[in-house]
Picture 1 (cartoon, rainbow, N blue to C red):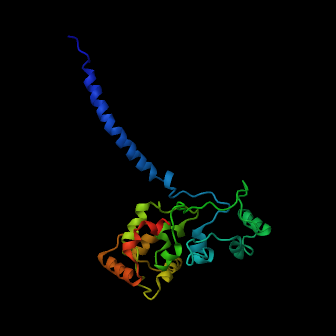
Picture 2 (cartoon, rainbow, N blue to C red):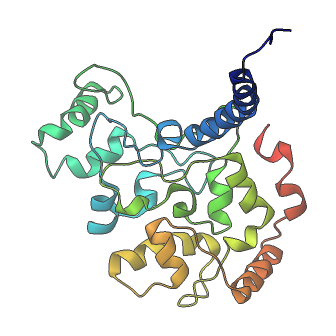
Picture 3 (cartoon, rainbow, N blue to C red):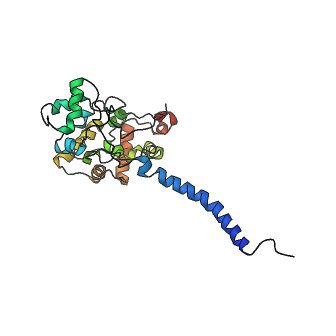
Length: 256
C-alpha cells in the first residue's frame, strides 16, 4: 500500500506543533516588551512645547522654589502649570527680547493662553499624564513627604522636560502596599515636617550640600533599596502620619 504522507510530513507536523506554542508565547512577550518601552510609555521622551523650559536652569542654577511655578502642588490634586503672569513676573524684566519667549509675551499682551508660534495650537503638551480613570492627588503625597522625584525622576536635572517614570499600575501599588520604603526623615534636618522636607531636598541640591545615599538616588531618579533600619523608621512614620496601609491598595483609592 502506498504511503499517504512522505517522511517530511513528520518534520512539518513537529514544526507546526512548535509554532503553535511558540508564536502565541512570542506574541505575548513581544507585546509586553513594546508596552513597557519608551515608544509606549514616553519615558525619557521630551515633547515639543510652545516655549522651551529648563527645570535645570530655573530650579538648580537660579534656585527658584518649585512652588513658585507649581503654585497648587501643596493644596490640590493638580500641581498646576504656570500661568503667563507667573512667567512674566520675571521675564518682563529679563530676557525681554528673546525670540524663544515671544509666545509668552504675545500671551501676556493679548490676555490669551500661550500658543505654539508655528501652529497656533493652544496650551502646553502635558508630559506626566495619567489616564482619565485614575485619580491622583499631589497635595496628599507632598503632605506625607513623598519626593517629586519618586514619580518624576531627575526632573531638576532636565533641560527639556520628559516623563521620568512609566506610571504602571503595579508601580503605584508597590508603593501603596509598602509606603515605608518611600518615607524617611532628613537626618541633617530632623525637625522638618514631611512637606518641608520635600522642598528642602532641592535646596540641598542647589547649595551643593551633602546628600544621603537615598537622596543621591532620588537626585538621579534611580530606585533605592532601604536598609532594614531605614524600613523600621519608615514604618514609624507610617504610624505617625496615620497612613492606613490596609486601604491604600483598594480600587477606590485611585479609581473614583
